[in-house]
Length: 221
Length: 278
Image (cartoon, rainbow over all chains, first blue to last red):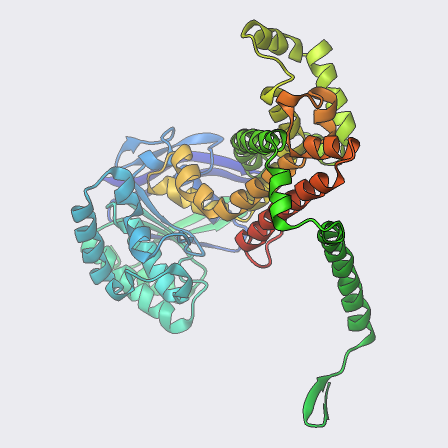
């Protein structure tokens, strides 16, 4: 079963175009998208989660076409480059945000938030304000916020690029653990070879708005 | 550079610091001097607090205060209803002719007050406003009432709030709304649950600023509604008292308006975060 499938996807942002991307990522695979800055990786990720309109092409998630679905109807988790936590909410409210929108009862919200926070090792941070968190802590909270509604696809846009080496290693290990536990189809944009070695099942390379290669890493799947 | 004189640390002041600091001090002295002059005038005339209160307790002055409060608060609601969506649109959407739109939005800020009044008068006499005037008249309502006052206040004050709202929405990272939408927000939810709370202080500051401006509107009201007893607000009451020689009453009204404006501005500066461009 295909986790994510892109059929001849093209999109435009100003004068820059991403052209004819065709890709199939197996359900439960950890797909890493690499390429130089400005290759169109983030734009493609935004198009997958519905934040950027397609010029042509179709998007399928678990064999269901979602090309015309609004972002909220796609059931995806998204962690952008700078974590983008809501600064007017504390850690607990940030993580519970999606559950609140879904109308999940408060006791159930609390149970799920605490359980996920324990899994990610951030339960002590729950009452804290966002402003006092370190870069690594912010990324863990952003990850918990994306995972709490049990998405069908996790999209990570350079989640460890702006944090120090120790935190990077810790979060990469966490991502691997979460992926193994939840079998969640993941698309992860990165620049770092060590991250690719540590995490990827499949690696795609983008250059000048084109997906130029897709390779399975030996023994990864 | 620091020097010690008789054990006291003295900071050496550079010429630039002296010049700029001196200009600031001079400006503060002039403004505070204006405020003090009003109080001094009453002192010289021997007006005591009790007398000032009795001057302000005259029925027409009390009416003007009530009318000012009612109309300016109504105007504030209308301004917020306009400024929040307009400020958001200017901040978030790519709009063709942006420079022209910005110029039109800022026009009421630089428009001479009397011109604003004449424009309103012309609008309701010859323009698109004729059907509105007819509709009001058929409902036994007149422009020379609270309605006209609100229109005059709205025209003069709305741009201040729109500018502030735009700056407030500009300060909200659009990625936050994007993340919200992926997490399950509709566009509407993302606006109310993410952008508005984060822009709240800027929106409140814009509202307070616009309210203070609306409270002081005079020129357009003189043209559109006049100074009849049923349309008296604080600025027109002040002018009326001045024109019939009741200088002390006029100064008392002026002091109240100054106190309200100062409080409003203090509130604005308290609400706007340090370093904000609003």
